[in-house]
Amino acid sequence: MSFAPRYPQPQAPGPSARSTRNRAVAIGLSAAVVAGLVAFGSYLLLENSEANEKSDSSSAAQDGKHPGGHDDAEGGTEGGAIEGLKSWDATKLGRNHVAGSVDYPMKPPVGGDHNQSWMNCDGDVYEKALPDVNAVHSLEHGAVWVTYNGKAADADVAELAGRVEKTPFTLMSPYAGQEGAIMLSAWGKQVTVDSADDKRVDQFFAQYVQGAQTPEPGAPCTDGLVTVPQ
Image (cartoon, rainbow, N blue to C red; front, top):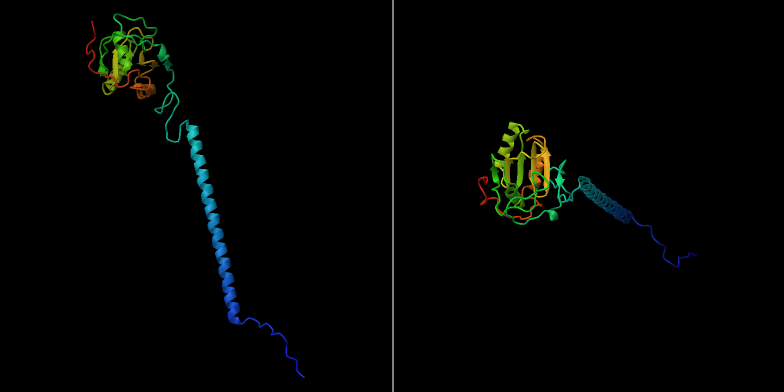
């Protein structure tokens, strides 16, 4: 007597089926590895980008500047703060037009009431002393006034004269009553320098020739007085 199985028995997979399954598993594992590598690479790229942004922001902060490179502190972006710079409250410097002389509290004056006529300050070098009341009007227009006394070396005077002649909105003249041998003045600003090569000359010109301190920006430095009033 023979007994036939009631239910069909499962057949073992053939070589072809096993090969197909193995390939599918290998492909799946490879895809998972590739996806993992891509995700890890993206993570590293993001981390590096954030680190660079933090580094750039830190550097800008250490420089005292905004990322755009603009410096908001006194002294501006041209060489930093000026050593020995003296400043006066511009709101307390009169700006009225007056006839006659004015008793200024500083020499050379850096602002205050003044004559209605300004000295030409388009790179003008004067060999004689200027009336304060006319020179102050030039400062109101944004000029830098270079002055010197008998203590200044001839070589420094000549070098500064050449610099002034090349620079619009500047003027230069002797000034016997000043304390320093060489002084630079703008509206509300003044500094004494040691020589024509003093780095503060460049700093002062860069910051105050038609600088932010100018009470009348856009006013001319021509069409004024071309000779010293008698």
